[in-house]
Length: 218
Image 1 (cartoon, rainbow, N blue to C red):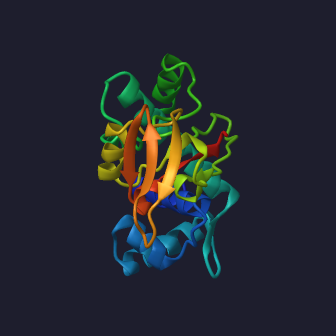
Image 2 (cartoon, rainbow, N blue to C red):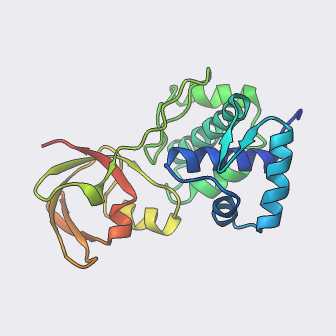
């Protein structure tokens, strides 16, 4: 497989992200994640396997080449998100879809210019690590706020950008990478998690608390 099409790049990026979130990559999970039909996924997976970009077994895994290509597009996506927030002052809940469109058209030369203009950032506005130009990368996720013990102080390192409405809600309440919150209590039976940030008490549904990742600092 020579030059990759935008559709191929989208599949490689999605497989990479599912794998690094610890989720099994199957035809069904890809179809759900990408909102496409299972027959469409099956046809693309066959194409990716023939191009030696994925290996098929019980689950799908990226080959070495497939992972390199996935990291390349993930790098461009996260650099673009950083550029859109830092330079164009877009909201962090708006940039994911824009970067999805722009990442396929970005040349290597423009990618390098953006990286240099931004001062070679290591993380995007959501705290996601930006792969280096030489392919070195660690995509590991810290523990979610939903698993933090009551009474601790929790430093936010990363916020999932899978849902723009959730990002908007969290951002409006100040829950962003670098912020430290006090974990006060969890309501039982699926009730909210209560945290305090800058003196304000905030209730987070379990789903929202699961999107916020970081570390206990005290």
